[in-house]
Image (cartoon, rainbow, N blue to C red; front, side):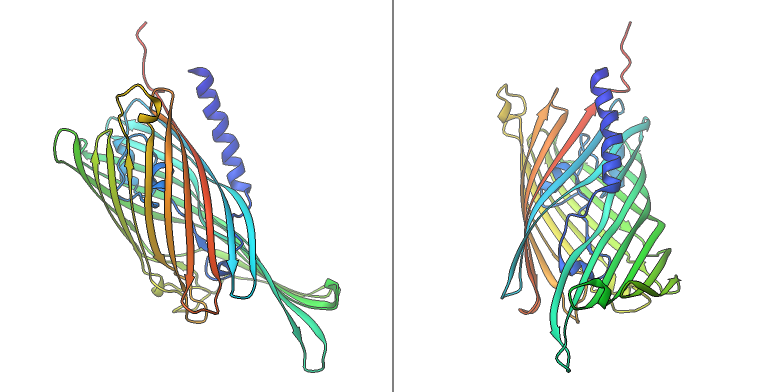
Length: 413
């Protein structure tokens, strides 16, 4: 028990540090726009079920997608969860293909009871990722050869602390996350003449964000029988104008021509509304559907209106346990699968893309069937609105560990 507790504490410190310094897990040219690729906030089981979470109800999982779920945990336990992903990406613009491999620590979180009907969760999760690098050969009117290249790095993270209170025992709960949003995004545009950087011009723009945002959740559980429940969850994220500093540097050859610090252009996040419904047959079956709508079209970005599209995302999935009470191990394993669909929030010359995903995964119980090793496999395809844009295909593997410990249990002497 003590060794396992020490292992968890070590994991919290190690993976928290790694998550703060991890490299981006993307090479997508689409991340040149907006805040980049928006992260999937679903943990463990939900990731394998299409990325659901708003209507997910489980006492053995941390679920920041709906903070109302924290209070449904066992009052004697402590949860710790961390996950990492690895992906293979294939980009195709119709004439050339590119293949990349990426990996990243995605999240680290813990959850624990405060009172009999209240619980808290804290963690570090990604908000968005930026990572791209591409160029184009050109010839000027006087016949001079030059290369235009574009590169972007960075992303935003959220350090959250959430509180949930049970208003009606095992029936109704509310919750909220306070999120500290931080990170930087850098874009570099370079025009290079010849073979060295000393004969080119580089425009470097870095935005550093740091602000506090909130999200809220509600979840109700309606018993259908002794072993069956219908769960309805709702989530809301209010819009927010972000605090930031913008640093712009122009480098001509090896000399800095100009350098400015600005914060006069508005950058914002949209109102977001989520609804989730799930059917649960205890220790046997879970079927869930989530819908998320974000009003990005009303959001300012770099002081400009109409920079984004409104975004909708729908996800559905299931979890099956063949026979929880049987002795054979693989009868107690959780088998999961799901689908998801969304449209892009970013606009590229007035166009965007559609995103289709298929997921599958397994939850391997460890210890006394309270803790899990979760493995999920996801195939994701981005289909652009016009043929001249880039098709992207991803195969992503996520490995997560969920530890569920009796830390608050008092033994009789």
